[in-house]
Image (cartoon, rainbow, N blue to C red; front, side, top):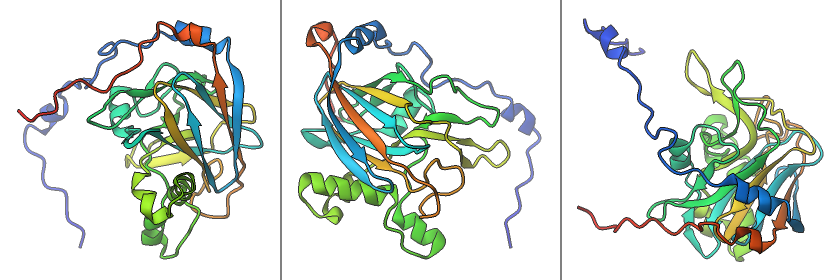
Length: 284
């Protein structure tokens, strides 16, 4: 028998009417100087590219100061992105803190933050051709940091059957190939993702996470500026544009392209490269 909601107290209305306070208001931290990045972008040249096949993943490396583009090339496709410090995998993208410091969805000028005790920006979003989308009537936006990643464990829990091309599995295999290890030995490094191109939100009635068809089209791209030396992995999600399903072979899926660009380093001469957080680290 389902439990019933407990009765409301006499002052329920006044409790619900409490004024909300934004945890980290805009302006709490200095914004990056995007004019510097624009000047650097004007000089950059492509030095590498990697194709990520549908329902698969690939790794890439980007040196500090390079730009990374994730590009739609054949059809509407979302991607799950992991980022690590190339020299220390314990420092990796921290989606929860990125969400708290920015919003549920990220765009130009927002930064991707790393895990504690480092807690510093490891990449800055320098360009986004889908920046026009904003939030739609359903409350959905693009490039979310709320979804975790599709994974075979949850799929087994919900569907009772194995599926080996979930983004978690894809990212594990790609990282294993990069590190010349077995997937099981490295999958603990796979972490909550930036859902590139994914269109998501929360339902207004039940507050459940939802997805809808991504507006991405061939030629669209999300561009990141590497604030540290990065090792990245990108999975072309088995949900395709995530209009209906994920973790299956039913959706139409397409490749994604990763492009690495090198700018004229003189344009970055005064860029304030982020150091690890200077909190002393000792408990009070």
